[in-house]
Length: 210
Image 1: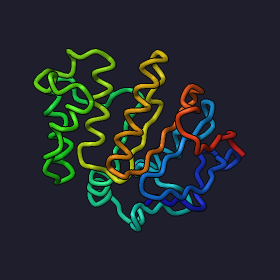
Image 2: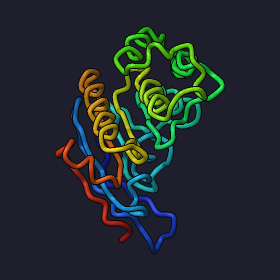
Image 3: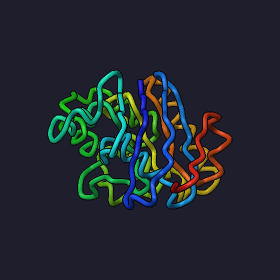
Image 4: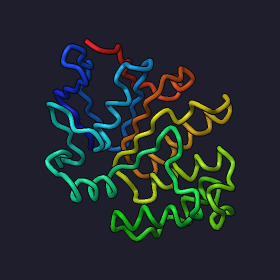
């Protein structure tokens, strides 16, 4: 489902990131651990179609991600990749359901699973609420729902537990795993949070720049 081979990226030619190959089947899970500056967010951005590698190839369900560009890449990303950022990238003036509908619109999908998603995530009763009225935990669940709204093949989560207490951190990881298993999607979590280590056994530890 997801294959990344021979990736190379650097901001400074004298400081190149050591980026391992990744090969995950449908439903596969991977935890990428590393300190700040180790390159873990750079990997996530490359896998998410947000940062083109200098060398190497990323395949999602057999399609080369960066063989596309512009609007075609945007549409492919919207249909196949769900990204959960550390800080929820959701539009505060819109309601919860409007945020999900917007994700459907840009990918060209119908959004017939939105209500079910909101129920499973425990925020169906907030569907008419403006995002700026939600608690931090509720806003994060909306961010997860929006990332899953188009039934993506790949789910990428960037530091999803960073600002959460132990109980909520555990709940969020379990929630992501459950949803990924339901969609048979690849799940990749990028974090420096050691609490996540016990939840996903398949792990890569980033060591920084070469």
